[in-house]
Length: 99
Length: 488
Image (cartoon, rainbow over all chains, first blue to last red; front, side, top):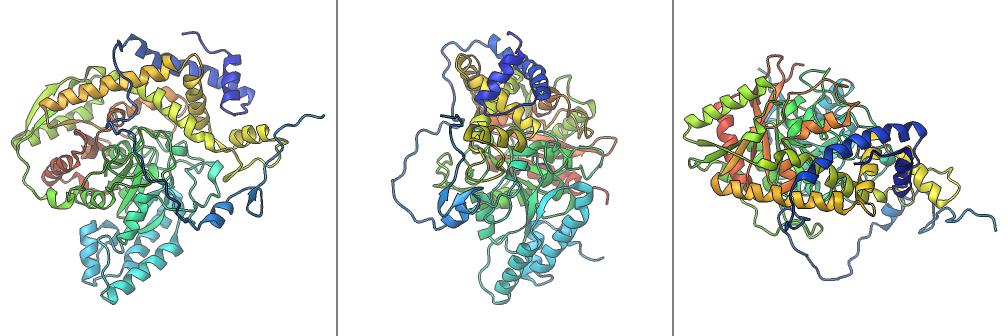
């Protein structure tokens, strides 16, 4: 396995929506590399013809009727919103470019 | 001798309440007092819900006085891991990002217990988003082991284990994704059960890794564990991974005589890395159970050493996806100073999450990213199948397995916190049950020379909780480890 570079770590952070400090980038570079090296011992397991498991007890798709129910906790839910206007959630502008 | 209300079993507390030897208010007050007195020392609780608990206890006392029907756990104080949502009661997941979060609903497991009359005295400390094996990853400070304040109580359900061990609540709920109930139960000298995946609802549990997470139970005795399990093991329309199965009457079945069993000792769990004292205690347990007519055979689960690498791919992958919801928009901490939406996401997450959480989100994002998903996640899901098949084969030959719960007793605070990989290795004997969705229980099996508790783990086939409980009960009836209490 190629050791992660600082650039790799920064790229992953962008995908993960984390804004890491330089110190974190350095620390994660070492720690993630050693964890990845550890998990790569799976490479030596022969998995030819083996199906992947997603659910340990083999539960298949579960469906239910698509019914409307009243929850009546809208105000409780909205009271947790950091920035709201009435029953709307206000978000920052998506693009921050000058025209 | 005066009655110590914090040391009762659930059955003793129940009969005391019915016979009016004490009230629920007194019982709950005693648990609250214990929690409040010990918290500066143990840090078991993030939130203690004194007012709500006393109000609820008084309502139950009124119902008992009016001779109204009350539930089987009426008036019994419990502690709840702060990762299970409780309506209008702050639920933090031990993270800064949820510091002031009050959920609009209650987790099904908590709700079912409350419907039976149980009274929550507070929300217990844990590793942030249940990511950890020591309790040290909490944004609210580490929990201390009641047996030795210099040591960790295990994790991630650190506070629930410490609360039950120290008498703050007669039982507690935790969650177990890779050993987070069994390992702290072992370190803290209490009973800890992880039920079969799907045996009970995960609704309202703040998700870590959805294919591995399961709500678990901490008690001081096996009987209490059976009682609590009986009340929470229900299929739930709100969690489609719960299995539609009738719930056995676990407390009743506990009394049934146990036929002679064939018990497997997987040789991969008795390796050099296991502390010698622990090995000796487990061998003593095997000998005692052998004298009761149970037959022990050595078995092999050859891919045991691959379970941890599988776990540390599947867990971060699922966690990075589950934790994507913490974006500072709908609830929780929000970095108000952010100039635009993308920086709101990154700043909120950078400031809100602790180090281990970021590490696992990074790892999970990497193993799921384009070009790597088959190499890591796909591969891990296939090795997972092999591990499950090995268990299936072994359970053709044996009724259950007996192993140490952890390779060591409680380690010192700070001992492993700088080396994530060393910390991960403390879960080596517990992750397999989560990977295969199996039920497993840790019960007290003795003490090291330095008076630290040691746990023994029983693992069984899917939905074999009743068998595991009966075997655990038999062992408990031959020993008095469970009756020992930490120094006060």
